[in-house]
Image 1 (cartoon, rainbow, N blue to C red):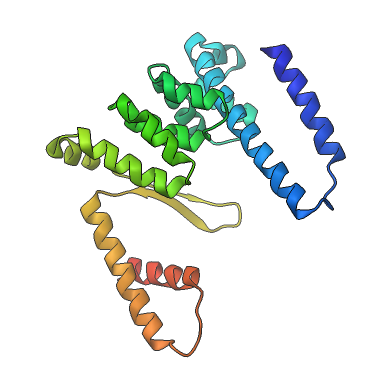
Image 2 (cartoon, rainbow, N blue to C red):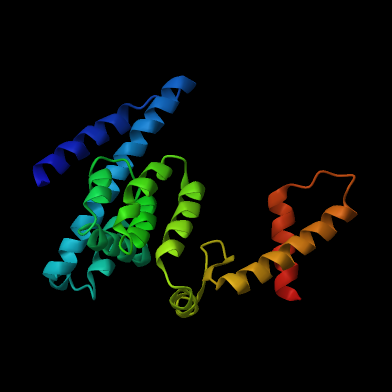
Length: 227
């Protein structure tokens, strides 16, 4: 494994050094497609290696409190991303169809995570979800929601969603406050309705000017939080 990874690293270093930014648009598209597959392959291997670090407690000798902390420090990413990668790698061990797609570079880390979170409850949904992944994250997410709902009791689903609520906030390097939240469907729908109402009012007062959708949404979210 190490020999193959070192060879891949050398090849990528050579490609990075020789990359010509003046390539044609067609070449850029082809290169992006290849890089997409390479990224998927690397993410898949990273998850399995991170899990192995966790399984063997190898991080201890480096002074890190957890495998996620060690891998995050080495890779220069957040510990949350590593924890999700380890969790996905664990679930994929019982999902051979999805694991094969990961090993072949057909699924990104995010796609694999989404599918694993659903397929662990319904392995028969793997083929359907893997196929939908080719259409993009939004269609895949919709398919995951539908697949999970098919096998989950409504009461258990409501209880799980209530427990899974989580607001997270932090300060970005430019001083802006960023965040991530998970809301139950009923609360989320209420927030979305409030934002949509603010957007509707704002658009009606600025009908003579074309306002970017992103700007309208930002303003509506801010006013919804203040109200």
